[in-house]
Length: 403
Ligand SMILES: NC(=O)c1ccc[n+]([C@@H]2O[C@H](COP(=O)([O-])OP(=O)(O)OC[C@H]3O[C@@H](n4cnc5c(N)ncnc54)[C@H](O)[C@@H]3O)[C@@H](O)[C@H]2O)c1
Image (cartoon, rainbow, N blue to C red):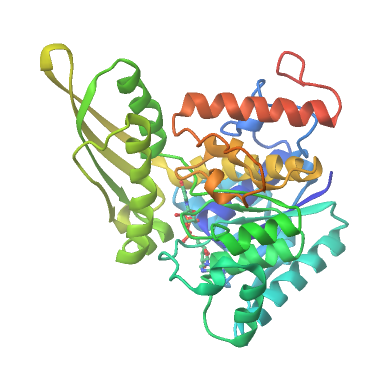
């Protein structure tokens, strides 16, 4: 199954690391550590192989991919030997990275994205193209009456004015082109009623939001532990220090607020109450793509005895995110091939702020789907069941999980 992976923000750290990783896997130069679709419990015939993935995308930046990859190698994010070995392949992918459309109305820009997607699919003889948003985090979208209905939205886009933030305009273009869409960022993306209706109209699946790769990943493991042991979490405070392009974007208050809101939902929903404390994100240029998270948790046990847990996480953000981008592209392509459409709520495992039933178009007589759990264990079980279902439909079911 030849599958296009169209990265919005194709020259960013996460995108470049994903591309280098996929090319290295294809060439047998590295192993799939970090890719959950290669675990025995999830592996199977439904996924396109790494060799079947063809990359392209949009970016506002013009730095060639090979240069971005060299900078990431200098920063210790990807091995320099891989970047040196993959120069030709990176240049070939660069030919499929297009400048983000500018000028005209938003309808003109969406049409230009649709044309780029169609040309990419045609040029490489692709069965489908999955659009993955890994572009810079945006501020929350300003409400607009046309966000409620796809036809009103089309009219408003053609009338001029900035009706949609860029992430949502890419989702609009992806659905219009019949492409599934994955949002790895906390931006609005497909999370508008008009876009949910448009995805339903074109029968395409979508997934999101905001890849879960660091502090929130730990929260989604530790918070269920406190809940299951009936321990009362009194406070949970976290400070995240990061550099890189993402860190620079998050130094802006509006983007920072969107990211913090995305991180904070997890605790309240797992514990059933919101403990004291805040999550902070601070930009420290020197740290580059490496992130440090410090969390202090105070909790009470039997007879009210107070205790505390502290952790420090030193993660390389792009190295944690890139394999998940490849996983999401493979799974979403398989879901599309199997005729699934609408929000892929079974992919909550990957996200800080997963899509839930509220993101679907209500169907007459439909019973409410389960609210997605934020607890990693439950998310894993749902993902494994979803994968088994796709593999069973694709041919041989995974033998004991393996294929
Ligand atoms: N790395 C992680 O662990 C992680 C986890 C969750 C979410 N994310 C999200 O992934 C996204 C990418 O992170 P990154 O570290 O690669 O950031 P980055 O700043 O390195 O890359 C973002 C890229 O998007 C491009 N861009 C900006 N506006 C654009 C537009 N309108 N159209 C097309 N391209 C545009 C930029 O030029 C840049 O190349 C961020 O939103 C981040 O919050 C990352």
